Image (cartoon, rainbow, N blue to C red; front, side, top):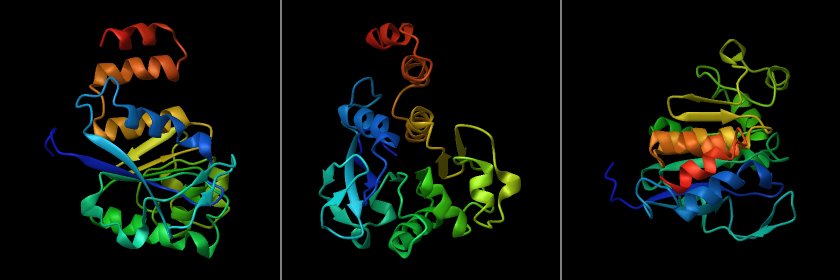
Length: 207
């Protein structure tokens, strides 16, 4: 893809969305600071409908578009935050859109409960992955247990997975997949936010 091409990263939004799991992702993609190509990416929200949704933190979000309108070729990535509706029929449209994206070779990033929904749909059966815990996914009766990795975040082809306690690693994996930052800049970003090392800040300031 051309560095001059304007690309949209789609964040799925729904009631009970876990705010903290995607805060690093949305803020740092949206602000353009330290990016290889500032302004190349934009964030948009997508939901099953256009009615406002309420996050776990009580934030009200008005979706930009609907899943029915979203085509993989019009997106750089679909991001699925954790939530409390993942084991219900209300989450089925997000799972089916994930399947559509992966079939088209467009990346998807899922964290926390969203990984549980993908596991139940068989989408983790042939990809290395992680989640909140191996026991969590095993309890769902999925068939991908041998591919589970005890890591904060895992990338396998076009799928990124992470656990609820790894929002920084989740963001790092997304930034790497999208090539938001040059590798040394991403290392400094993680040094600051992941390792909590102030040296990362000064490295970023000089990047």
